[in-house]
Image (cartoon, rainbow, N blue to C red):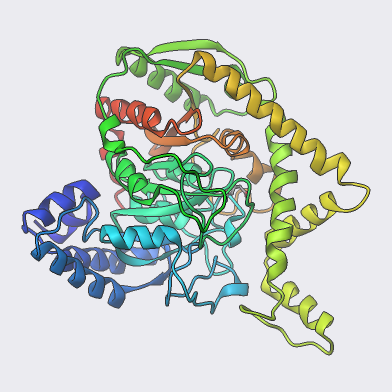
Length: 487
Ligand code: GLN
C-alpha cells in the first residue's frame, strides 16, 4: 500500500493490517509524518509536532505486535488537542501563558491511550484555552479547513478536526465544553463524540468550565469513535466527577438497522437562524433514518432552548474566571516582571492572555461579584435545571434526538472574528447538551457546495451506545464519511 493510501485508512482498518504484519507501526507512522510535512503548511493543524517521539512509540508498538499482542489502537498514529497534558511534551492551550509549559505528568486519557498502543504524532491547535468556535483565537495562528482553506475548521478543537480530515493522523482527541468536539467535527466532515458528563476522566485536562468539560474522540468513522471512546472511558479516582458506570464494548452497539428506535426532532432547534441548505440536508437525513427503521417523532419540544446560550455565557465564564485565576506568573507558565507582586501579576495576565480569554474572565468575574451573583449565576443555575428537566421528559418518549450540529456550513476566516455574539451563535445546537450533561455525537451528513454539514444525535445520560448505533446505521447507509478533501 502506498503511503498516501495508508494515511487515508481508519484506525480499525490500519489495526487489521498491523495485526497481519502487512505494515509496521513504524511504516505507518512514517507515512503520517510525511503527510503532515506535505499538507500542514496549508492546514496548520499542529502547534507541536512530535516526530521523534512518534517513531520511538511506533517501534515500541511494533515490539508489542511482534510479541503477539493485539488491539484496535495498537500502533495507530493519533493527534492530541493541546489542552490535554502530555508528560515531557509542551502543552500550550494555544496561549502565550503556557507557551513553554511542559507538564510533569500525563492526563488520564493519555495513560489509557498509551496502554492501548497510541503513537502520538503531535499536539493540535485550538482557540486559546478552548474558548471559541473557529480556532482563530489561538495565540499562535489560525487553522484552516481542509475542505476550503479560506474557511475555519470550527473550534475550539479545530486542529484535531482538521488533522483527522486531512489524513494527518488516524484519529484525535478533543475536548467539548459547549460544542468544541462536535462543531469542528461537523465543519470538517468527521465523526466526533462528546461523552456524558463523568464518562471520561478530566484528570490532566486543563480546566475551562469544570461543570461542562468533557474529553472525547474525533475520528474518520463511527467504528473508530466507538473504539477510542471505549479506550478512554471509565472511572478514575483522580477526577471526583468521574462516574463508576461500567464501560461496555461500544463496538457491539454497531448494528446497521434502527428498528424499534424512536428519534425526536425538537421543534425549537428547527427555528430561525438555520441555513436553508442545512435544513434540507436534515430532511434528507431524517428520511434515511426512517428508511432504516426508526420512528421519527416531530412532536417534541424543548421550550427553554432559547435561553441555553445565555445560561452558558454566565456559567462557562464564571467557572473559567475561577479556573484561570491560577495563571498568576508565580508557579508556572508565562511570567512578566513588575515593581511589586501585584504589578507583576497584572502584567502577566495582561500580556499572557488574549482578548477572548480576558473577555470571559471579565464576564465571569462580573457575574460572580457580590450583588450580582443572585441575578446572574444563581438564575442561570435555575434555568440549567429547567433545561435538564425538559430533556429528561423528552427522553421518556424518545431514544435520541436528531438536530443539525451547527446552523451553517463553515464560515470564512475573519468573517465572525469581530463579533463575539455571531461567533457564540454557532454553538446554539451543541451548548444545551453540555448544560444538561448529555452525550452528543456528530456524523457527516452531506455537503453544501463542497462544504460539510454535520448531523447531531443527542441521547440520555450514558446512552452512548444508542447514539453510536444510530450514527453507524446512518453512516453505513450513506457515503459522506468516505469523501476526502482534495487539498
Ligand atoms: N465555542 C464555545 C465557547 O467558546 C464552546 C467551546 C468549547 O466547547 N470548549 O465557549
